Length: 102
Image 1 (tube, helix red, strand yellow):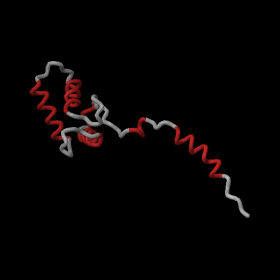
Image 2: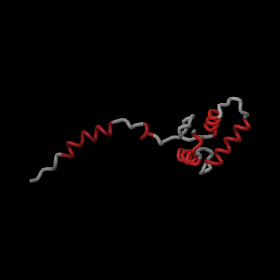
Image 3: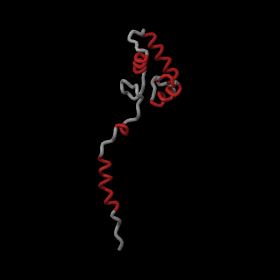
Image 4: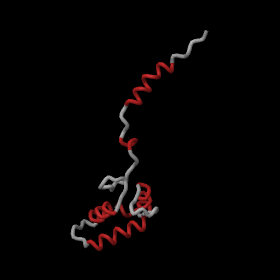
């Protein structure tokens, strides 16, 4: 008779070694926007306010102006109207505003 090929048995330890490795961080969670300061996976109003204050290098901005600027950014960039920016919405906003990162 004909015996089964030995390759699958030999490949088993390598497959087991691959599956026992801990997943890399990139595999564990989806990409998040780089300015996600509170690490919730999105850029929300809190993150946007931090971004605005850092970009304008201002600690004494009025709360009203900060709220208005945050609302404006969300109205222009929040494509699904969930009051926060996903990674893809953030990328889209940056593509529309190439001077933003200069």
